[in-house]
Length: 150
Image (cartoon, rainbow, N blue to C red):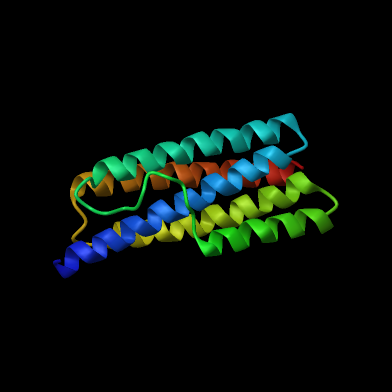
């Protein structure tokens, strides 16, 4: 396989895995949220990230981006466990989960920036990644506002 294609496939797989991890994390956060508004916010993020996955997989049907099951990564599982521990010891479970959502979205934005920096990335895929990154940026601002409001 061409090295450029391998690099693009690797970047897209990173984005797929990051979104799978986010889905699992937001599902857990929604399940554990105490306030209805925070619960609803996390549920909305699950739906949004599932849409991101569908868009990424549909944009690169010729590439092997993994199964349609949401597996996530070992690092994501560790992060979710850390969220459990942190929320257990924190006085405010919702605030701890919002803090982790902010941290996770910042890490995801870094991965999206790396994918956008790929010069050989096809334009149509780059536009999908750019639009998703913009949504992440907006979500990050919302998470920070919710966190500050608490």
